[in-house]
Image 1 (cartoon, rainbow, N blue to C red):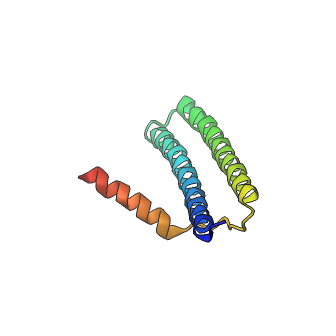
Image 2: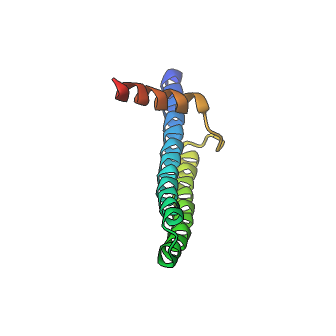
Image 3: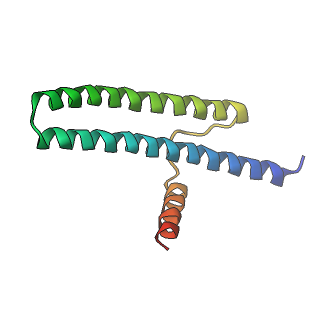
Length: 109
């Protein structure tokens, strides 16, 4: 088997690994943004019913964040087990920042 093919496959797997982390972070940030909007409304309109709704939404958001992280951890564990390589759960910040900033720069044009 050609070693360059194996090396390319490992690089592709690491890229996919970072891609899943990036998607997980974006989904968690989306939930946090929704939660912050609800809490902002709760602080502006300080009524009992709005505060109760804010507490319920806070609990639902925490459960949602927990489920997002657990689901993505299962996917990443499956990638690690399938490829039989030892990847850590640390973020490759260079890959994440390059992809994120390229998308933001292209969006601005």
